[in-house]
Image (cartoon, rainbow, N blue to C red):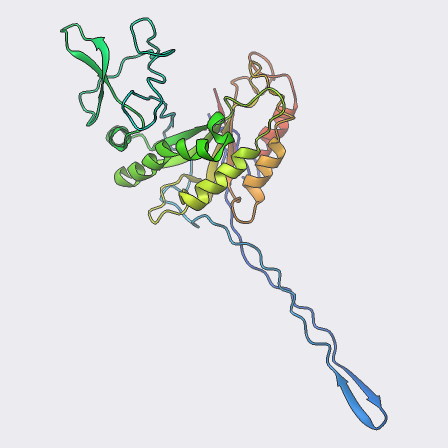
Length: 315
């Protein structure tokens, strides 16, 4: 469910914000003074000064093939399945709860049907007919292509590609975790689907850490991946602005204090930075955020942040 504030500046999980940057120039001219001294005219020119305040230009495309979140059917896209032999070096992450993939360590709630996948990986498990069980990896472009093809076939407009907090702490982690997003950008253009970045605060430490690395990551995505300025721009906008989602505010089972993680700074950056800002912001919050009870923090600071957002999504 999404809701919008009065000025459309910010969202809570599902809120969006637009932005733009323009150059401005102020000129102040000092008078030309004429001074007469000893039969000579000495003309003193206090040269006209043009004090130019050049505002940095927005790095986002002014428009998108998906200009609004309203009326869209969007899904979350974690892209977290790994397989031994893929390019990640992540073993059987999210297929196995720990270590080797065995019947005792199986993690998925549902087992994938992989007959349409171009690339799959053998496991040590066997099917009922004795054949080897194979799985896909989220690291492969062919995997993402198939998912976006299915979305096109079944009327799903696009996905929020999740960026989990833990890998964002280092430059190496940020680049390594970008593979799924890079694949999604290509697939979105191939199948005409929308994408948006969702920052998931899962992994944020209880103390001594804030959201500054998200600011750095967003800058890198804008500069290096051109996530909001592709020649075919399928990044999801809301009210003319790129939509960025922050998920994980107000859940009492999370150890961090939402007042101490730099949320004001992050939202202000996404809304107002002259180059990277001008975004709509959506916040992912618990179902009972209105009453601040039932699996929701009792801290009214949550309402303050929701009020600054463009829209919100209940979980």
